[in-house]
Length: 473
Image 1 (cartoon, rainbow, N blue to C red):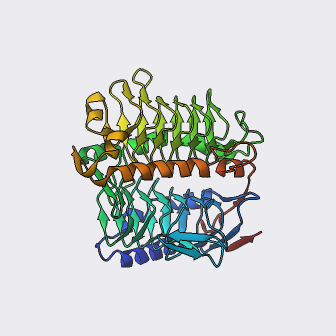
Image 2: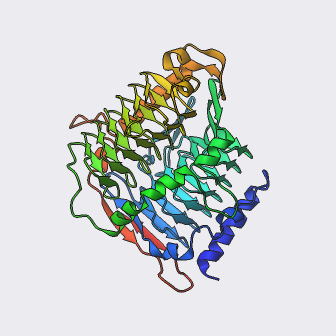
């Protein structure tokens, strides 16, 4: 048996030990999912800038097709086409604020992935875990295709395809396909597929769950089989374009990049596309025949196709925007799927919030008014009425509110304020407000970046693994 096969079995055993409660066996989901030759076919790569301290340590791991930025340690793990983005890691001497406490960091913070199997996953650091201020950890865990681990230390967990864990520390949990959870901390929980939960303790709790027949259509996971559904089909349609850019070293960017903007050389840009000032386009983003207005961003695994973004628009990790017009400062949440067509265009008014994992797949043209909160599954004007609220109305809610499959309890004002503050933080952090001299963000810091590659063993017992490598400044 090759060392990579032994490593995968070891990871399965370690995860299963953690998942004794709830009783869950990850083996049928992980074994034979990726063909062995794929791990030897793709190189890993890491980014170098003057703004991000580096320390990369890879030990007995496979990092095929995976990307790293910032300080990262990968130990006895398998990362397949995964992005590990540590551009918000804290530094020695910084403080982590938690309630009334200010906790100083003794060392630079590092992302540490150990005994884990991450497949086409986005790991982005923005942790607020006071129990582990110097280490953002992923241990004894597995995540499937296009899951997001965002600011969420996890241990002993399994994440289904297109699942998102956001600002939530997890212990021994199973997160179902296309589920989204932001709840501070969870232990020994099974989050059903398609469940959306945004909870801030003592403030509010937003809950929605997709109908089973909708999930069956868009994303479904069964033991022993790869994920299937419309989401996977959509990604597969664009796969060839990404394979091309990973094979070719580009000497010049495909379109002009204005002042303060950043366009990753590992992003796909096609057709008549333009980006404005202070725009951030991350690796593995896809832009086609679209205009991305000033201060907007297209994060990892985002697709913006035949669309126009007026400016200050956030398309969070995995968001897809097709034949859509977004007014200014519209937020599109993680792994949302917004699909109009040439004759059924989607328009979303300024200042609106599209909740994470929302599906808008149109049967008719649709205009969503300004300042609207949208969630769930929408195909037409009638369904929009049962899956949206004016933000002003939500802000006036204090208590319990139910609308179809959505339930809300607590302070609507607190929820609106939480989203508003987070949107402003994302724009600020991404450099949307850069004025030419001040308020630098990720777009400006990533504007000048170089990439080094790491090749795996091409054959033999170590095929698909990379040698032990340590890289320091």
